[in-house]
Image (cartoon, rainbow, N blue to C red; front, side, top):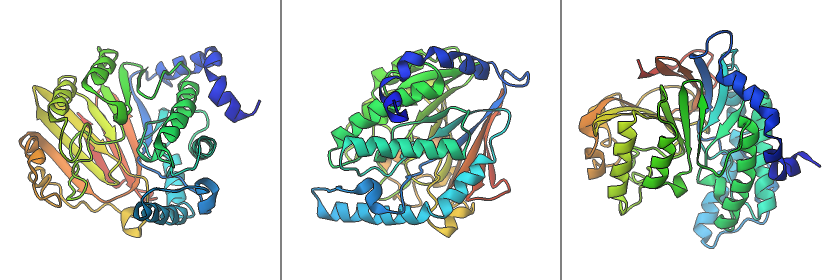
Length: 369
């Protein structure tokens, strides 16, 4: 039986072998049960320098869209022969004795595959690369991104992702994971992994119910909760669409997240963005991350703004959706930077950001303190 066969068919039957390692991690290392770190990556769009390796047979019914996707293959191939590998090598240096997990915020792969077999191969190669480069003995947790389920037939790619990644996350965490939305714990803290494609108020409510009593509740989701400052993509947020057709449900979910003082860890928009918001009787802190380094300028940290009053005004034209939350923003910053991130969790929570492959700290974001 090869490794891929094991992952897709046999992981669940061997869960008992992984329970002890998970228990040791959850109990802390070196006598520090309530303080630990997590190394994090945003979108990575892992790909090959050979466009035919994973994209052979790929087609799209809209020629213009297919042409744009093929430009992305070229972009990714160039990035993964240089900048992105340098970034991951830098991220690997952030792993230390107190690191319990590595997180990746979705769009693990570029996607755009012809069939389920190629899609699973793509996912498996990406996981093998990151595990080898980062930390083979530390759980690697990823969430569903839009590229992760993109192919000639998105439903085929989605099923392939779900089959592969459900088993793989079970293997990584040492416990049975059912589906692509789930909850796991580390010491006193809870981590809620949410598939934003299937998100709804009942789903979020159920997941948060499993996190009750935690010191900190972290939401790992590909898309941001708060709208992205973009004229074209301002609707790229949880339960968002161009018509804002799910507005009432979106606001219900926001109230639920605020009530639970949730810390959101996300990606999708290829920026490094920090937003700390008070409202709906609670607080939501959002850290948006990117690790797809395609331009030299993304390798340094130069914020476009650090003013809460500028949220939604730089690019989006101050649409009403931004006005819904601007008054509650206590801290905000936005930069077109890519890099690696280290989450330090204790009674205080902060993220250290290293732009590009910088050996020095670029910015510290205080999430709780």
